[in-house]
Amino acid sequence: MAHYELYICLKQATYESQIPTVLQEKLGWDNYTYDEDGNIASTTVYRPTWKESVFKGKLGAPRVSPGGSYIVVKGEFSMKEGELSAIADLGASMAYPNNSVLTKTEAQALVASDTWNNG
Image (cartoon, rainbow, N blue to C red; front, side, top):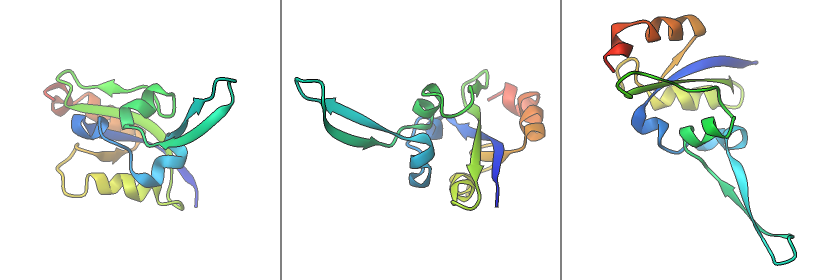
């Protein structure tokens, strides 16, 4: 199976929440503390929010709807590793476009729509 470059339309609350655990290796990072000699004293695994991952450069630049309700980000996700399934699960009980996985064409259509412009 391959990795797929896709777009995700996240609702604002999801964008500001932590990424799914399965995405930690791809979108998370380690934080370090140092001793007085500058050596690493401890390492802590940090599970960021989607927004933090974007601004750390781990996802594409966000496109925010005029009302701020929706944020579209681009990323490469694996079906094999369960990443794509975890992202799809975020929107399992929600109406489109909340937490929806999109192709490039679908993302372009969304940001040109009234749904986007009124969100």
